[in-house]
Image (cartoon, rainbow, N blue to C red; front, side, top):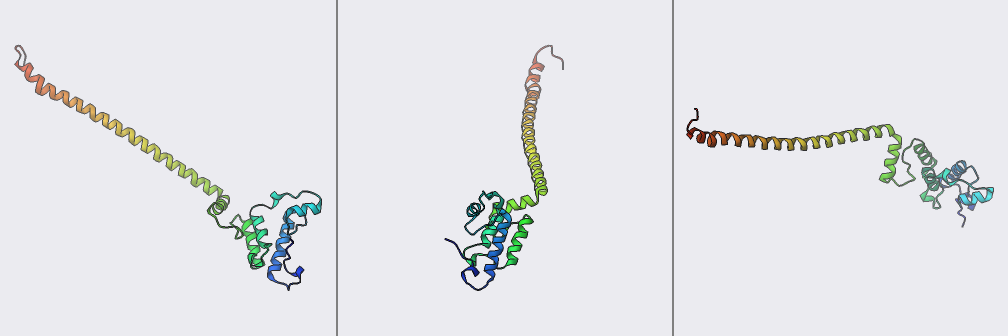
Amino acid sequence: RRCRPGRGAGAPPSVAADVWGLGLLLRELLVGAAATREGLTSAAARTGGPVSATRIAGDLDAIVAKAMAEDPADRYGDSAALAEDVRRHRAGRPVKARPARFGYVAGRFIRRNRLAVAGAALSTMLVLGAAITAFFLYLDARAQRAAADARFEDVRGLAKFQLFTLYPRLAAMPGTLE
């Protein structure tokens, strides 16, 4: 079923029809062939060759789809909003034609700020590595402290034995010097 955007059906001129026309023009510019409302396959049939769907994927596809929406209420409010979405796409920012999901917005942010994100990730990894190293060094120091305390208690026990147990026995033996 072919959708009639407005003037072709005898409707009076409207902003929604202009936005649809701009969407159609944008699609034609992107695919390099006369595109129709039915999509790329009919354009390929009319031109006699395949039209690459990868040339109009992602944000641009969403912009064209919103501009050429069947229901005029789903289209951009005016051409300025369409132009703003194209500017946002060119600047690497999230476009209004797509849902603002976390993964999409974060992906756009990372693409715009690759160097800063890489630096932050490297810094985070270094801090995490230092924290892990400090934790394991703490565990090792604690184990060595426990071993040193055990050796000290052994020496203390030996000294007590010599002073309070062995010495009185030796002093009581005949021929022992003071």
